[in-house]
Image 1: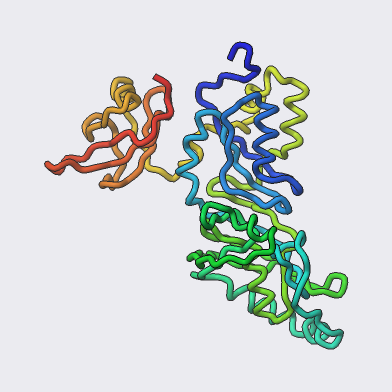
Image 2 (image 1 turned 90 degrees about the horizontal axis):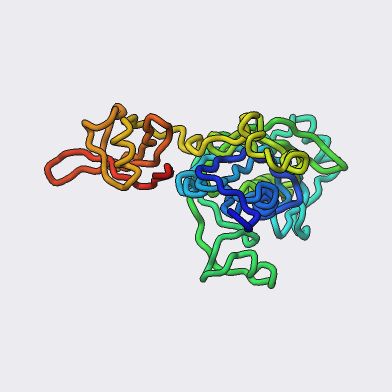
Length: 332
């Protein structure tokens, strides 16, 4: 865009970023926006400042696909420190409550293989009702909970259903006199891992909080191959004019349809793809439809030149099935 200092990118894409500790998710967005010289930048799945790991960053037109990423399951590796709770449920908060095991208790704990911790970790798996922590972005009466918490206010909030698919103890021991465990957790969207750490503290009776937290997966995006933020900034500083090409060549700038890789695919010809991109529905005889087509099914629609948009199947009064253009990403 002339005179704006911004880059005009017709399609955009997804950057697979490894967020560092000590910065907010929005802070990552701001830094990416600056180095990529792009206004339209977003992210999927907020990470706390003390946490690190997978943070998908959406560039350009790819920001429109965020709505289809909200339901992603996620995976984490967390270090749980026992002995006390904190008001933020992580290492950044003020300590309170809990109990440091005595020397005799620690000896018994080691002798029985930390059975209490192993049992508590195993019991995390399954359906649970979880209360959002006060230090969170969940909104009550239009204000995020952390604003109330910073003023010392405790407000009423409702527990939410979550599901822990897997809770596995990787290691456990005593560090500086306190029990410490590393746990891997696969969970549904909206799960607060630091709240699960507090649950472990309550189950053992010692108190606990999250000492370290790494997100290892967010939907189809995993920590393997994620690009550290500082590397992106170094590449952009070295070759600011070619950063987009560099990211594409290295396979780091992913196509936006990567975010919906689990959606069935509809393939159609050029004319049908153009009509779809213009907002006109596709008839089932105009494209190669997936098996199991049914009303309310969402699909990724592809034309000869690639991804066009997201289609939603609907049935008319005569019983015919059509593919409605729910979100178009291709430029016409």
